[in-house]
Image (cartoon, rainbow, N blue to C red; front, side):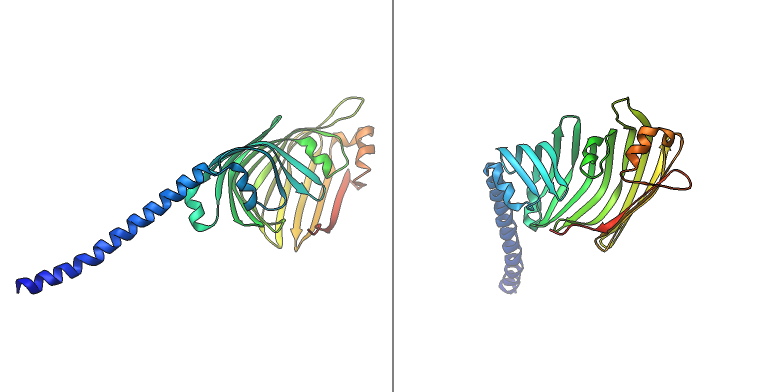
Length: 266
């Protein structure tokens, strides 16, 4: 009886020992992976990035690295991120989806958030906080404007260079139209935007200021539409009226700004 029970006992212990051995091997493999990442040069990161992201001047390692200059390529032109530092979550590599916590600095511009690279052409950004100079908008609209833009984006996903999902808010604070004769104060505005591919919408509201802006933005099946109405005392400024004539049409009250068309293909 003793030998029989002893044999049964040993048979029960063996699978447990095998499982312990597998866990140890997995722990060793993870340790080797982490140590390997800790020594890989930072420039290897570029092999995981979409073609729209251009990095220059690498230093550090893949795990904790830095580039002297980074920029995003858009149809309208490049958006400069400046100096970027990052920390990689090594466990994310086990799921073939590298996740980085990053900070970017360029002049007064600041960005920080978490970026996950789902594939070579799919990027997910979470908890993005950004402070920008509104002059970057000149690449999209022909107006000389000033002020500060802040963004708090809970989630943003880009697939194959196209925006496929977003949830967040943008604020344009102390907006002004800059002219040779002097700046014209406009106000402070907010854009709440959300949606998924094929149906992304945003609502514009005025928080304060002499120029009241209301309306919406929409991205529907890769076609965009901007429909805004501009009213208020600021629209009586002749210089501003002349500038608005480039992008707006007179309405019963103030001006209407309407843009629509197809998003540029890659």
